[in-house]
Amino acid sequence: MKNSVKPKKNLGQHFLRDLNIARNIVDLLSWHGNPSLLVEIGPGTGVLTQYLLDQPGRPLLAMDVDQESVDYLQANFPMNRDRFVLQDFLRWSPKEAGFDRISVIGNFPYNISSQIFFHILEMEAEVCEVVCMLQREVARRIASGPGSKEYGILSVLLQSRYAIKYAFTVDEHVFNPPPKVKSGVIRLELIEGKVLPCKFSNLVKLVKQAFNMRRKTLRNALKPIGIPPSMAKDSLLDKRAEELSVLEFETLTSLYEREGLMKV
Image 1 (tube, rainbow, N blue to C red):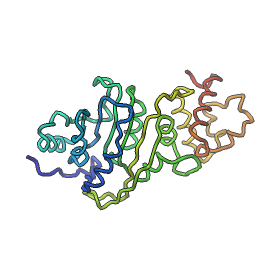
Image 2 (cartoon, rainbow, N blue to C red; image 1 turned 135 degrees about the vertical axis):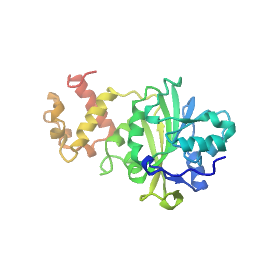
Image 3 (cartoon, one colour; image 1 turned 60 degrees about the vertical axis):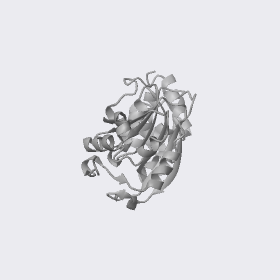
Image 4 (tube, one colour; image 1 turned 90 degrees about the vertical axis):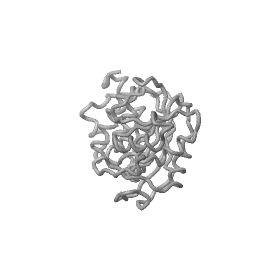
């Protein structure tokens, strides 16, 4: 049986050591929407996994890109060794694995946390719920609302699909090795039944364009994709991206589609 796993800097590994915090993270998981599978990203040494395995009848797939971690988990949880796989979540498709609805949990590596969320947004299968720990700055950004400097692309795109709650902050000293910043734990719950008034890929395009030039008004920031004739004098375009609500971004994208500035 393997006794430990060496944290690898190139993989952004910071292993949580505090069992109370691990339990509190797992307790945030509600299995919203009765998903057919729970995916743990980066189980590492299994500090979260041990509590996830305590829930009978709830299928778990724990995936890690670190072979040492997978070997350690398979050795220390021999009755569940088939639940631990060497797999990159960013290259994994739940549809191809036969699942239509999943939940996600994990201590996300700081260096790919944004990529993980964009992958979740692009998945064909429904991700019903996400409970995760990541860099506090990113966690706050995702949960922030309009009018804040933290409000950005991920805030709008994730909030268009999820109700998001910032749960709590985690100090550096409870990790091995300690990261240089604090961590934040957030929970995302799918807004069931919501129908976007626009194509999601068009919302992504417009939001990215608006925030890539966030110091400019929308009238200037959106010029590369055109200004709808009906909005030529609309005061909404005199605002900056960080001032628009998620609903306003959705409505604006829908208008772009109706006026033929974006393909549907």
